[in-house]
Length: 223
Ligand SMILES: Cc1cc2nc3c(=O)[nH]c(=O)nc-3n(C[C@H](O)[C@H](O)[C@H](O)COP(=O)(O)O)c2cc1C
Image 1 (spheres, rainbow, N blue to C red):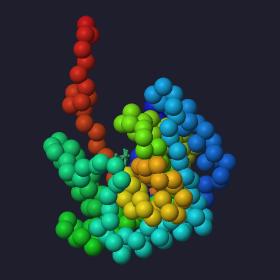
Image 2 (cartoon, rainbow, N blue to C red):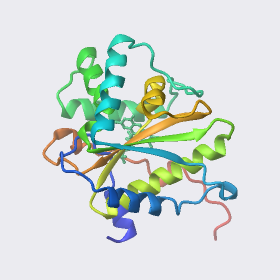
Image 3 (spheres, protein in one colour):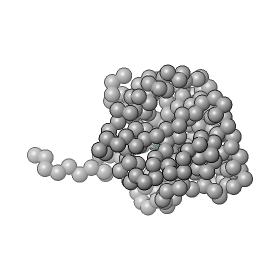
Image 4 (cartoon, rainbow, N blue to C red):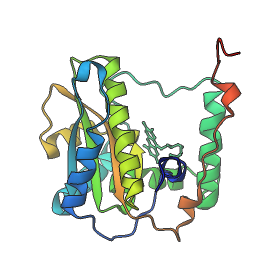
């Protein structure tokens, strides 16, 4: 695929087929993603890749914890749940489209809770990734991990695979830390699902709109 096609065709996929992804493919994607740039080339990204029995155990333990302690959601590093405009409207538009497609009415908290919980099943993808970062690094390193994640998602798309980046995985981090033996001096910053899209599932019909260039770019000094 041409780069522009890969970029434009990648979308967040939230329902996967059970078809497995070979370890060799995962290794190749990781090696490609590691070509991502990082400030002063420190390459701060760290990633746990889970499949099979380990993935099942992680999902089981996180979901059990979530049922017992639903309020134990929140990341280890500062994050704001509040969004001002125009971000709030964009976030709501995504939620409206997504929940509308899968028939969850506004205000149905139980159904919303269950759907959000699918994050912790990696949306049934055969492979999950958990990204961590040394705690003594700064905001620039979060950018570096983001670049690694996007590079990974594009490399996957180019091979016919699909992904969903998942901030949801920085919730219930105590469980993820324990199951994957993540050291205390690393933040669990995000997760990602990897696999083959189930194109028959309505949730995968979500198309997140983008704002026109004029709304985010200011071009200076052009003739
Ligand atoms: C850092 C980050 C965290 C995200 N976290 C979640 C998540 O926890 N669950 C989810 O379903 N989607 C998550 N997404 C996917 C976004 O909702 C999605 O990227 C956005 O709506 C744009 O849609 P697109 O990826 O299909 O282009 C996340 C994306 C990013 C970049």
